[in-house]
Length: 353
Image (cartoon, rainbow, N blue to C red; front, side):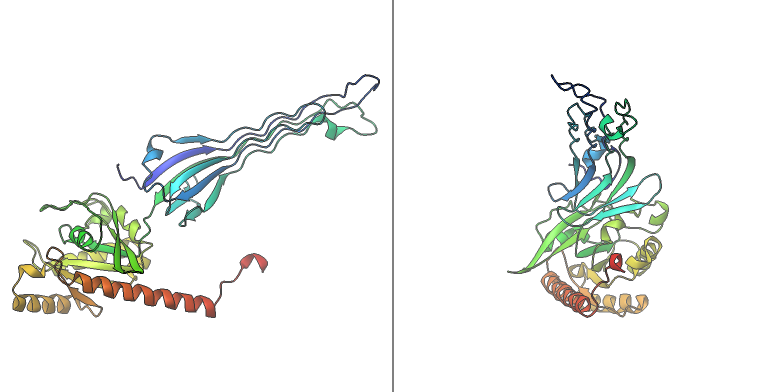
């Protein structure tokens, strides 16, 4: 199935039904008076997040969605039937924008969360509402209101705890294959990964986290070079970034590549650039131990790196277990810190003033 992370759709809520003009007619009841009922309300349009789908590809085929209209009122003060609401299933992690105003309508980041994106029109009033002491036989009603219509832009950001960052062929896909059940394509040419992949890394019986692998970045990605920078949105929900660097590249300088990727990260989002980031030096198995030590010192010195550094071989699966264990410890510590902060500084309900 093709991975699609952007889509534009048109939604139309149901129109309200028209009110009814009717008069009571029964034997032995002369001049029964008006009894026209109201029209039914039009159906609303909702988006609901579900894990039953993980791509927006369906919205490239079906682009228009319409809720049911309300039915018209009837005599004997019978109101028309309301239109059924329309529920549209989207993947968890979908952000919804109004395509015309660029207003952010909501973020569906949890399962079964609903978001109303178009309100149905109210039903019209029947003639019974217009009777008075001076107008006992009104022939007046109101039509139903039209339902709300909107063009929506949907953006999907994968839900992951850890994101892999690096240049093409740095070994990101090999790493996620080594530590999880994910099976992205691996080959000896650049841009093997064409769309993001998720993998669940299990560290212990009750310990696991989700890792995201995105296509490799090159210098100029923000201007459209390579596969572009748009896949970086899939790292926005992560709590930790692992910057994978090839210790033994066939060509090029790993330090220059690492600096270029850090620059592209900053161009895309200052918040993402400030996210905790670890340096992971990959392919140590291609170098003798002494050369690998010297290469590590050189890379760390030239990058002026003062954060955590890990040396692994994703292909030989050396050091990957230790890296996964350290990541799990970091995530558990950050989760505990967040829970403590929430306890000390509970969120303020702005609606209550």
